Image (cartoon, rainbow, N blue to C red; front, side):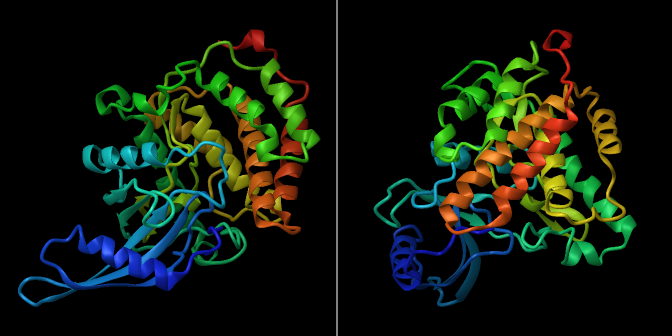
Length: 358
């Protein structure tokens, strides 16, 4: 679901043409056009495809399509902008790992150009499993044969294994949690409790119950800290054929236990099927097989997955409440997320005792 386009496209194109001119020595006749939201663009940042044309010093004409991503201002899903950290992380991952992360070509911190900081990324062509309408309901994933869907799912999920195998210390990723060195779950639960009314001014009772449950049953020890994608899901991958060609949207990235990413990946798929009343597509591996494959692939045993699935449902409920408020009107997104949270909570009762965590 893309951020609604609220800026003047022509004025933005003119400003960008001037901005590119100062950063492309020797380029002449620079024009910017074709501002449009790419397929699969998320809601957290304003994301646009732009067409950049120019002539070089030899008079040869060039045309490139790139991605413009602007830091959130008007449609701010989270209370704290981590845009600069996102840019830094993407640059590290693109340069120093084999993950298919689109390179950041330019980063502008001065908000006077477009009203907020922004970055220009290389565009990656391919197909994205859609959130709206759900890839379980229609689109190219529905058109695949069940064995192809299985290949797609496993290839997407294996991105998590590759991501969690990265050495965060070697890559210098401590900046993602340097401002608060406390354990991941403590940081996260405190954040959502502190900003509860920012996300959900109407204070949904299910989210309050979930937060209380999460506090009581918080594991006494977390697993090994890994780089977390944060918004880990099929819809944040661009596929070429059945292989991931780009990993997108790092605005929720952090360091913490891998269970958080795995549970989020599983819960978002559940939301896009069961959560909206659509049968899950045949061929997609079930939860147990997915978890077991991850454990074999990484050599890491996933612990307390039931807890992290409640945590994922709780966070998604609050985030959808915020998105729904920003969109205005009556949209089913948050209602569906709340109903699924209530179901997840019911499945966890009677809840396991925190004293059994290890």
